[in-house]
Image (cartoon, rainbow, N blue to C red):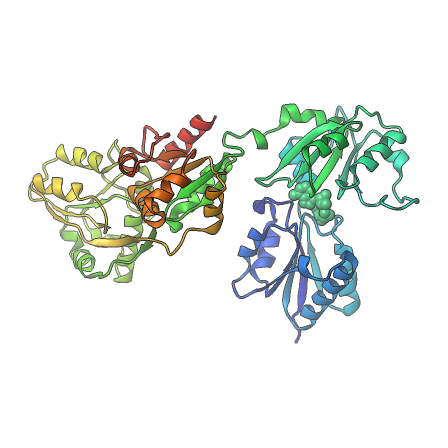
Length: 505
Ligand code: SAH
């Protein structure tokens, strides 16, 4: 039986989180993905690695020819029994030629489904703070192609109604024909003073908004070199933007920030910065790998209930420790009455996710804080297990031993250098377009220096604000000759994000 089917999926306007759940579902089962210039490439990560990815922008030379070839490709893949996702910018049925693609599939007898998407006008409206309708201003909105009138004497557009009706008008593909279309609206009776907004790369980090009037927007666009892809919103509603804009008002909007962390853990911090409007460039300087031998940790785990304390000083230590416990066929019950100390609230949360409440979390979230808490207890003859990174400082075992405790500190994971830095991050640093670099542990800055060499490090970070999570990381920065511009009072990722906000706000 032939199971071939084609899903025409709207990718949304740009922000990759604006695709629908249904769209993601289709991508997850795709065997072939045929995607457009305007569909955000990040969405391809939803498709299985084995899926064939075909960029439709490369198919054919001229636009029309290209469309026939795309139609043929959809039919061919569907006939071959493939699950095909045709991923299209915005909505497939709004100026997307999705109708033509469905007609071709229908004719060939290939089943298809259409998944709607947030069309550019709607995305641009939301992210520029311009409601397309408003009870007190206008009750209608029209989506119009800006290309229609080009080179034609006859127009299918009813310019009289569009101009005199008073409704909001949104032009797609209308930047090269901007002057012509604005002129046309004035000729057909819309006031030259009507506000107009151009929104380019709407809903993405690169979103640009230019505001003017029917009379002057074309000049303004020429002066600022405004380029496609953009939509043009015409109508009184545009004036609401001053009051309602939010996307380009966020505290870190327009800031380019390099996040240096282990690749496995960059996501959470990056997301915190991105929701504040920053463009985040990830720059993993640490790769976490297993210890060279599990022998010592395994030995400790087998005698776990004989320990009085388990001390965990990072989320990584928690993850590697519990993974190993699991590998040995054990679970949290193996801890018996052993008490647990977490270095800070994040590590504590990670421990709670294994169904265990930490007994001790110091107020000062670092090794010194842990020591401070233990110094209030009688640690004499206590047995302490401290699973740690290979390059961890030895203050905890040293000080606990001084208090009379017996400490085992097996290596639970190692920090090694990644093979290389991501090219887009290096490129941005070389171009001097970066505003800030963040270091969240000593090894992040030490590894970066080792990978680049100190001279290149200094050169690349000229004019870039350095943010460090706390005094120990700051000291490592200073030891390498870097000036620290931002350091939060409490040493958490949330506090670091807030300190960045305060610095740039
Ligand atoms: N099917 C798409 C439109 C395709 S036509 C949709 O529903 O959005 C291509 C035009 O859409 C571009 O020329 C531009 O006018 C507009 N467009 C698409 N994505 C855009 C974006 N992120 N920002 C501004 N305009 C966009």
